[in-house]
View 1 (cartoon, helix red, strand yellow):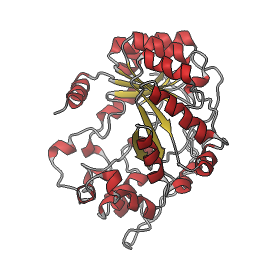
View 2 (cartoon, rainbow, N blue to C red):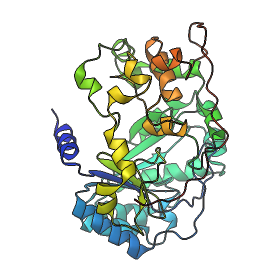
View 3 (cartoon, helix red, strand yellow):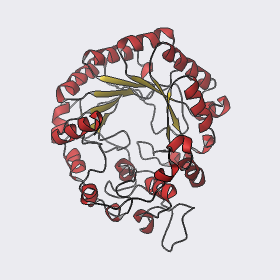
View 4 (cartoon, helix red, strand yellow):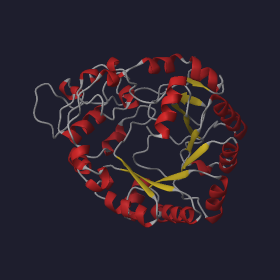
Length: 377
């Protein structure tokens, strides 16, 4: 067992929030076509509020801190926040589009001790990347910022979100990452907006393209192993938790709302009304999330993919039931292995590449799941 696995297991046993994802703003200088955020900047947390919450995180046991947005560097106090977080000994990861990175900013991030910086790069082609961000020149500017950060000695990760408009471009992005000495990650997940608007999921990668990704050795390693049928389910899997969200990690919005995860918009409390430790220990919503084991999942508990599926409870929640299937993840499991999922058999999800079966229908997400309101326990 690796050190990280031991750390996560210990945190889970003690109910310690090992990691926090903090969005310091939803404002952004790009307008990505698939973005799940509204770019409202009214009544954001102040510098003093954020620094006070960071102290609370540290006192509760948080170690990993992701600072993100929107574009976090649009806040004039972003470096002050990062530096204060490092004074508290957090392991800090910054998510930025790097448009505002110059030599001074790159050097300051390195001197502050930021562990890594993640930058979304959608294509090696300016006309594709810039069309996705809706900002002309954004690819060249982001790459310039990345090169400055690499020159300063920072670890950089290219985050390549796959969608219809860049489906064939990931080899070029992977090559760019290698050229700059950066790490590369690929993610085909497109999520509904946090207000419930599901129109952006129309950008999801077509099934035939996703299946090709799952069979690309450069991306997945051993294709035979990656695409193998799921192994038998045992009691350890049935008794396991479906996800770390709400167990050892959580998400904080620019207004202090606490959710299990950025992709799991279940309001659990607000830091302007209650302390972090009070919400973490006493939120009824978090208590419900933590009570769920794999054996409690409707439909999924009977699925042969139970132990290997990438099922996201947040996506399931946005489809109406946090204990139910996530249609996108059902499709991924099928496209990866060729084995039909319990969700598909129950009519929750279907891939156009699936064998014909009576009763299977394509899931239709509601146009709106309602606007989230901040609540407190």
